[in-house]
Length: 217
Image (cartoon, rainbow, N blue to C red; front, side, top):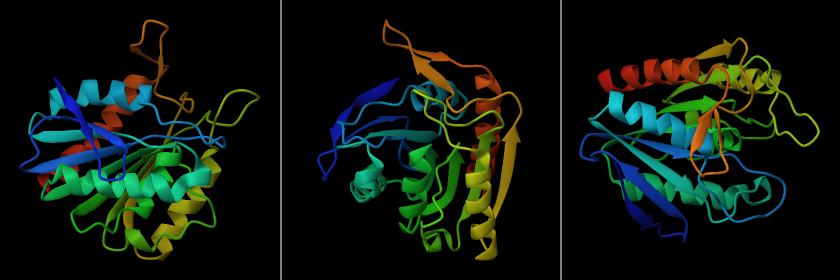
């Protein structure tokens, strides 16, 4: 069961599922070009609903940015850092969806962070990857992901380039292409709940594998 909303020091919001005394997964959402108010991610919300039951000893902290835009990427990174610190777990994994991949990578040098999991992550060529040094990077990307008119997307070739740049820095990790998968994992239905998209169950299994590795480290 999700806990109450928590205001972060930056003005963003966070909600936490599970105990924070051992380890936490801080989850950060995607964004867009326009500078609009942050929202909760349907994809992350659906994943947390599945994974929190499977990992009852982990905390899952979902972040709602102040502004969810890559034009305010620095603000989103500040929100992610505040979430890591205010969650207060001694060990942290960062899980970033879409633009959240760049956010998670940029915040990975927080002292408690050990692992970054990027789901269809946006890793622009200009993004510095030095915060990943000494951490693990796992990338999972849908093979059918791409931008279409009116439909957001991130081509796998972009995250592959980012992953290879990280490997060149000595970063440990794995890159997984998911056949038949699109950009998102879930979408929000008109009644408010997230509805899984094709291959959502496989997304959840691959993330669970990474969290098992993180939990057992």
